[in-house]
Length: 93
Length: 288
Image (cartoon, each protein chain N blue to C red):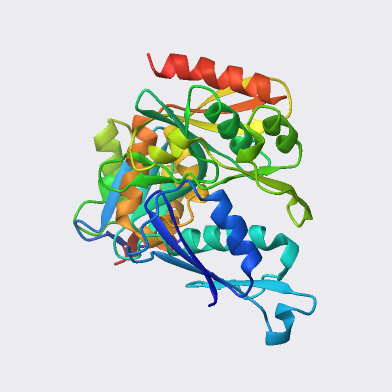
């Protein structure tokens, strides 16, 4: 799988509300509500302002959660990023 | 239209017009004790009309119309005109109301706090609310409950309770027959008989109350109680709301707040007595 680069939603576009095990996300642009589970909220949080790919995201998440980057994590993150893109919550850079 | 009536149920002012006198007379009887203000502009319009002029008399069949229409809805025979009127009123509110979040749920109140019960048709939410409303609870509504978008309060929509099938005998045994409408037998929804809410419930229908407990009843099976997380309650209530999508972020914010501030449980019960005992027990714990 190619490691594509994605950009987070512009500031203020998403309203993110944790509801126990689920997280509800209201996208002000599409007026759609999305319900996601971990690690989606963590990924959105780690995206930041600049574009990043799965490899960059793995490094950021590893730093944020004080973990080592395992090689097999990157394809999983790439898949989650493509799912977030399908929901319109991140976009291809 | 020749036959007209205005009815205020909670914050909604209905204007109902009919090609026939019978459904309007039946409604006027059910809603005689509700506040009347004919000068107030209507929020929702319901029309009961004949498909062709001669069908007013020849095999009369009632079509339901108004601000919103369901194109494929089958007409009902005139003997079920009251049901047609009720369906029309529900439809206009479900599709048209934007001032509050509308939940397909029943609600009762005690000590200034509300118990909201949401469930599919047949879950018993309506029967439980009706029976509680005959005790020391105030019936807020058997079908729809409104949530204030900004303050989060519960608002009543105490239309005449639509008792169905077995619930008819159960409730009829406890109330003054003058509070019951005519029996509508073998309708597409089974047997139906309307119950006029108690006068105190109608008099208090404009008083908002704080939600204190959310229940998702399921009729049948052993008594069971399952605490429900905020996320699941949120998902279920988005499904139970007829106008969640239309309300946009205001609906999202109101629903998020409701599930965060209100404890929620799924309950199963084999009969009304067990259901009521369970409700009272959970209420006593939630109201502590």
